[in-house]
Structures are given as C-alpha cells and as structure tokens.
Length: 394
Image 1 (cartoon, rainbow, N blue to C red):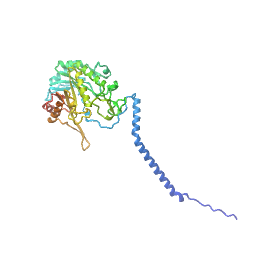
Image 2 (cartoon, helix red, strand yellow):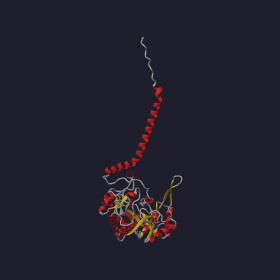
Image 3 (cartoon, rainbow, N blue to C red):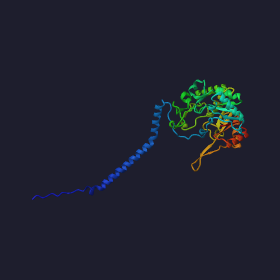
C-alpha cells in the first residue's frame, strides 16, 4: 500500500508580514528623503536658472539690448518726489500770500496749445500775482514737448509738442517770465536712441534698468557719458535761444532704483559730486543769457540722503538752487501708510539755505511738492521769512 504524501501549506502572511511592512516603510522613507534632496537642489538652483533664462529671453525679445536688473536694493526716497507738471489752468485763482514777485507756477502744456491761449493764461497768472510760468519741455521719460532742431532729439519729440518759442513770446509780452523745466539724466528715451548715452549693465553693452523690465524698469542716461552731456547742453542752448529767460533743471544726479551695484558708468576722472558740479556749470554756460536753476530734494541738500549725488548738492557751487520738500511716507505700527508733512520749520529752512550759500549758491528757491491749501501757503510764508527768493507752486 502506497503511502500518501502530506502537503505542507505555507501561509505567506503568517511568516513574512512583518518583513513586508518594514520594506514598505523603508521605501516610503527613501522617497521622502529623495523628495527633500530634490527640493533643496531646486531651491539652490532656481534663481540662477531663472536669471539665465530671463537674460536669454530679453536678449531674444529686445535684440540683445536690455537684460533684466535684479531687485537687490531698495529704491531711494527721492524717487517718489519727482517734479511733474500740474493740471491745466482753467480759472483765475484768488491771490494769496503765497504769490508775489518770486512766485513761479507750473502751467500745463495743454492750456497753451496756441499763442492766444498762452496770452490768456499769462494774463490770468499776472492778475494773481504770479511772476513766472514753468512749462515742462523735457520730462522725466525723455520726451520733448517742442520741435527741437537737435539731430539726436528728433525721435524724442512728442506728438503733443507745442510751439514753445511762440508761447515764450506770449508770456514775455504779458510780463510773465517764461521758464522751461528740463529733466537731465532721468531719461528713459535717449538710451535707446543713442546707446552711447546710457548707463551700462555690469561691464556689458546692455543698458542697465532701474528695476526688472517686467516691473517697468527704465534705463537712465549716464552722467559720465560725453554724448549725454553734449545732448543736454545742446537742448539748453536751443531752449534759451527760443526766449526762455530761466531754465529749471531736475534730475542732475546718478540713478536711483534697484540693483545700483550693477551700474557701469565707465571710468570717472573724479568723484560723483565733482562730475555733477561740472555738468551743472557747463549747462549754465550753454544756456548763455538764460538763468539756470537746479532743483534738488531737501533731504539731499541737508545731507540726510545724498547717495544719488555723491555728496550734498550744497557743495556743488551752483548759483541758483531750488529746494524741493516732499511728504515723508512711513508705515505706522498698525501697518498703515502715513504721509507726514516735511520739516519746513524756519530754523530748518534757514539751515539748508546757509549750507547752500556756504557752497557758493547765490539764489535759493523753495518747492513744496504734492501739498496744497493752508499747508502750502504756510510753508511758502516760512520760506520767504527764511530768505528764499523764489516759491514754486503746483
């Protein structure tokens, strides 16, 4: 009789369940570690990779002219205090204590499109005790608002350009001093028209931008560029010849914005302040008989914030300086943005004026930007009491 073999049943769960659970746990841990390593590598490599990709994209998009600027340093306070032309004059204003022989007022170009309109506006200004009308003929974007004959300027002329010579004549005939406002190196137009005028990017031929391009970054003219200096001198000479008795120059400075350490100005023969002082003197010479005024922020003149000037403009030795005082914007403990009136106390303004006079300035003016009403009137009266010869009102 044949003996029947016994079958042995093997229950895999009974003998290997514990080992499987351990293997699964090890696999999960390995996946977690791998994910963490990949995340760390991505974190380290993301920014250089994005920077390279952005640079290659801008080279392709813009013909190799403008790589992006990285946002590595905060913008300065002066950037928000730019001088701009005010709204159009529509009705005569009531004379106030702020007007008088040394009172200048911004005039919108749209209100003086014809000599007849200019004569009417001039009459209104005269009736209200205003002595000088300021018209922006070159703005901070680099646009020109008159038909310049300077070759380099032809493509910068705005479609809304006026007959600036006719307007100057109309104002003069009404006893109002025509004053041309001109922005100097804050110019986002000419660096594209003449690349020799531009601030460059880290030793390359790319134009430096004051912010990333996708955030509205703009190029600047280079104060150390001979082409940029010549361009400004030619404009000032031309504007003077059109009958403008005074020229108000803003933006006589080095750039503001982000990534300032990437700016390439070329080799400076001296300090920044020495260069700007010379440029200012050359502009006065180019203007001939016209009187050139230079507008600087109060914080720069007082020595509180002068990075864009190399040193306080009080030491530039420029004959005529207009001090711009602007609201100080801060964030309080509640996280709210608060505008604080600037320090326009008589003692403060006297100190600023004394610093300018020590540096060689002969005439000092005052401009309270972005403020109107009683605060403006009170500040201008204080400036008069402190010896400021000119008050510019919006």
